[in-house]
Amino acid sequence: MELPSWLKSHSESEKNLVDSSVQKSANTMKGASEAARLFGVNVSLIKKWGTEFADFLSVSANPSKGKTRWYSESDIKVFALVSCYWKDDLDYEYIHSLLNQGCHHDDLFREFAYLNTPIFQDVPEEIDETWTHGVLVRGMAQPDPVQVARAYKAAGDALMEQALKSSEPHELGYPILFSYRHAIESYLKVVTEYELERGDNAAHSILDLLKNFEAKYGNALPDWAKNRLIDFHNADPRSTSFRYADTIVFSTEGNEKWINFYQLKTILNGLCNLFEQIITTRLNTRLP
Image 1: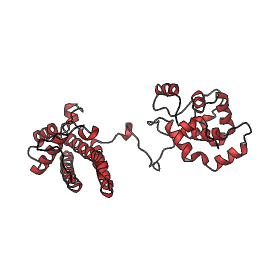
Image 2: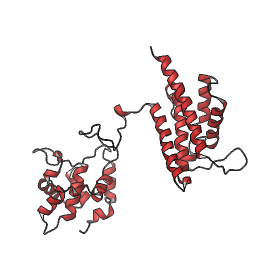
Image 3: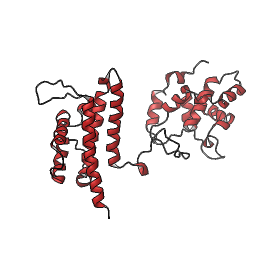
Image 4: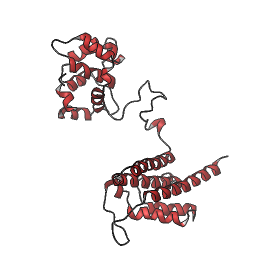
């Protein structure tokens, strides 16, 4: 099978990319004209494919008379396969047999459909609890700030586990440090109710957040916790050092430092446990 040019490049023309950028990002459905441009064919052929292979397409691909045709991500996979085998001496039965075998779900066609579908999609009607391959964002799915803090800690732990199994742990060093640092920042904002009181989500200074914490809770943190928070602040005062590989300037002599991952994880566990205790205590005092 000779791959069509659109499948070799895995991209649309520059014009089509510009055209698609002005569409609503949540609209994952493609009209007949857009689908035709995607495959380098005319609209009449797209409609012909829609009629011939209707059994494998969504309902919106062949709507009732007078309604607009819309093609889903799944439909694009079907069309991708059809396009590869659509020739002057085409064998309809052969294409139908490939579709019956589910060949349109092969990596080649799935990747093409993924690359040409917006990342942030409308919620599919058929979604249910079995859909564990993605997440919902915003709306009813908006996570609690505490959940976000816990998630960044969990992400750091997962990266840490992978790094410790690797012979090149330095490759994950900055992502680990960024995840842990952001977890700390997020926890501090939660326990000080920073966003609620200040309405300002721009500050990233751990030192300033620590001052807010002490103003609210006094000397609730042990010295080791305050010192380790200041360690993070000194190394990354604006939350950019580990995010963008900005130059880190340590106040102590020498700018090359060693980080023990086992120690780092112990410190993060200790800090996050302290924050969780404060969150639990605060919640209990608010219960009737």
